[in-house]
Length: 194
Image (cartoon, rainbow, N blue to C red):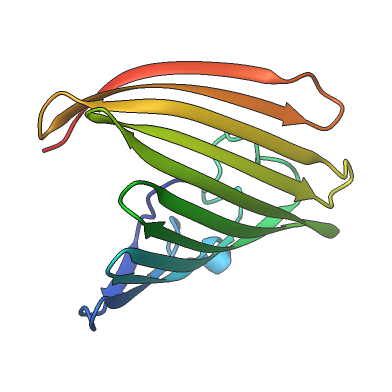
């Protein structure tokens, strides 16, 4: 998705929890007073019931380079980039010996004078092994843009808790785009929770 992970000049409302169901809505006025060309809005729901959890979110971002919504380092800073709409659905189910994850995402990019969209599906599992957790995931994306491109990626990793608030992890990711060689990424890290 395009843009920053934080929205300035925004107002948000979050509902109370209704038996595991909650929601929120947010609107951003953009970064330049009186300039509505950089508005953003989103809505989300969360649902938790026993081993099942689900979420859905819709986000619309209207861009204009003048207010500075797209920094020059952003790959999407291209002439005519007008707006982006993203809808996501996700769910998980925990069977204790394995936890399943699934996600679908639809992305529409409006670039004058045309537009294109991307469909992405992802599935994953986590499995307890020893004191830690094995993680595995596969994702597939298809874009109907001028390149008519597909993107396939899979990853495996292991997360090991050192304490209640600290864990270490190692992971491997394989990426493959249409008509390109595949890429490999390795990562290790330590995480502290406060």
